[in-house]
Image 1 (cartoon, rainbow, N blue to C red):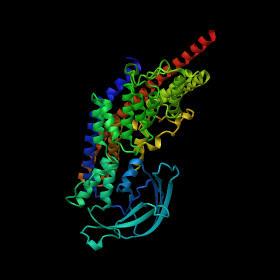
Image 2 (cartoon, rainbow, N blue to C red; image 1 turned 90 degrees about the horizontal axis):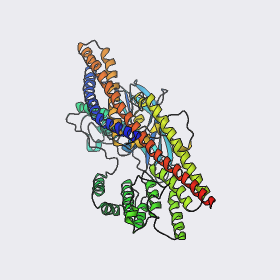
Image 3 (cartoon, rainbow, N blue to C red; image 1 turned 60 degrees about the vertical axis):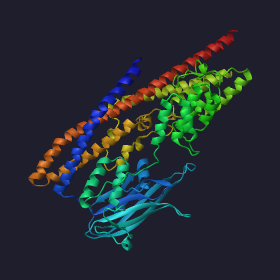
Image 4 (tube, one colour; image 1 turned 30 degrees about the vertical axis):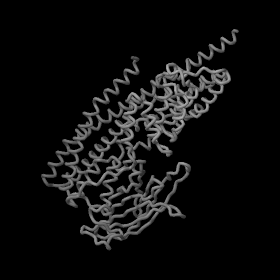
Length: 566
């Protein structure tokens, strides 16, 4: 076992073994923090907001991305919505934008919002809307709901503002509407806000808001979970059974045949896996059909393009010769899969056909193993066609790109050694929850064409965000982060009281905070281990591809020298 691979295995083992203990400690500390937080609220008195602003969306053809609110001449309050939060808003959730004190009298509220359309054929489908409303604040709290509404048949989307009025008693059938709602009813904005928090993974805030609401509305049950997308759990169970069974291709073919014409990542995964299973069995024509069924842009499109090229070169009747490990790509020495025996003209036409999908891989994410293999395969194909100069150019291009990628990996590792990956997120205010989606830290869509500069390297974050262990740690850390901020706020309120009970409760908070902070640091280290493991995996794959590219270039020079010597 080589040293980088052994280090990668050790890091993954450490992250797996330490994750459960760290997660258990963090969950226990968060639960204890919630109890202290609620006890402090009861003792110090719950702070009553003079104005609460909720934000929602009823548009299904667009997603809310940003909102700004200004009360009179006060500073703007701004919030950026992550993709998950935008989906939760469109599913009926409400986001509490602000809850603050407001003096009685007339006030002007100005709001502006921006949304992006879901039509993939239009990349400029962005719209903005604004609204201005005056409210007459009395002694009672005011609730204001901002709602992004869809465009009519003609016209534009609008941002609507409506004041809400709570009724503790049941409302008559003819008394509903006009902004009035019954406490605890399905249209209670507080209940919709809890559903929003649950759907976006903010468990601490959701549990705290629910328990406070249950004190006001006894017997209130937890709201149902908000489904943000159609689940494919049964389908993935069938997929895992097909992959794990003996008749892999047959099981996958059954799954893939049941897919609709609409693009779907699950169907793309099934078809891509089916294509490689058929390719390994020498079924080149059937494999090509499976690869062509991969429709949606995403993680399986590149592997399908790569596989389609090899499928056009695979032989249907040479099963043993076509066997190859999916990751053992060595186009510099031999094709990824055996090329069928052909006459010179037929062979040239087949290689040219294979180049068509492979060329589509040019300019894509170089951390993708399929893209790396595709670059080397293009150079190999050109060399087979006798285009020596072009093959040399593509080999050198692949070597340059892989060398730059390795330099970026080393830079990212050095940055990770200097500061934790989530340090900027942990330093941000808890109310700015969008930082936890890491959307503001993702790299430029074509980061690999930019020169390596002083900006932090974040190209590996997209792959990390697709890993379930990484997402789980983000949720746990966000809970602990919000719990710590809430306890510190409650501690300041308790110390202002003279009651002995307040001092005793503040002492309990002082005892818990160090343990909570220690659990956060340990979980942050677990996140760093996952990030380092991902960087090492990218480096290992890039080194292997770099060896293949360099070997192919040397082999090309040898071939040219051999021809010249004759």
